[in-house]
Structures are given as structure tokens and as C-alpha cells.
Image (cartoon, rainbow, N blue to C red; front, side, top):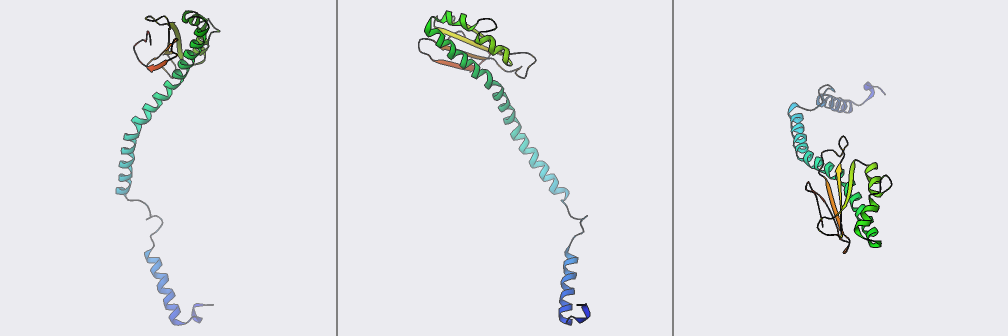
Length: 167
């Protein structure tokens, strides 16, 4: 069917619609965002990153401190169980066995150095300290301190720069 065989009114309507569509369309090179729209998006992204970045950085510090907190708690529970069979002093001696004791194993496998000792103020307290090893991902993080009262079984674990001597 050619244009000459169409009814004149239909042909006129078709051509008018075709011209209206073409004049309303932008060239594909003319499509895009204006400079103002791009600047608004950049400002919004900048504000969101300024708000989110400090929260993100604090979460990474918490994540790095999760490993030693877990290991300190486990060492304290194991030491308390050992102390039930004897005394706190014998439990500390057993836990501190070179190369094979739980403290030596924990130190060898992570980014932290673990030490265990009897409490200085109470004979029934066992204290564990986790200090970050230099040159590891944990370097620069505050030490983790923990203690267990063998009589009550109460365990305290905290992140602190000051050395814990008793529960």
C-alpha cells in the first residue's frame, strides 16, 4: 500500500503525527544530565560519605578486637576449669606450658600475644592480657584485658590500656 492510495485525511493525520514525534525528540547526543544535576549528585555523595566513613572505621576497629576478646574469654574459661581441679596457681602453670599450652598456642596462631598470670590482689584470680603484635593488622589497637574469679566463675573482659591485676 502506497501513500497515494491512502485516504487524504488519514495521510494528513499520519504525516502530522510523524512530524510531531520527530520535532519533540532530542538527538542522542543532546540527551544526558546537566552540569547542575551532576553537581547535586556529587554533593549528596560527599555528604553521605562524610557521615558513613567514621562509622565504618569504628566498625573495623571493633572487628579487629573481636578475635582477642573471644580468645581471652576462652582462655579464662579453660583456666577456671583447670583451677577447679587444683588451685589457680597450678592452672596458670598448666596453661602457660611452653609451645603446647593453650596460651602459647593462642599466641602462635594470631595477631596477638597472650599472657596469663595469677591476680596480684587475690589468690583466686587469673588474669589474661592480649597485646597486639607489631607489624600485624592488629598493631595500634588497645590491649584486651580479662580476668576470672575462680571462686565465683565470674569473667570480665574489656579493652583497656591499663593493666588489669585482679577482678
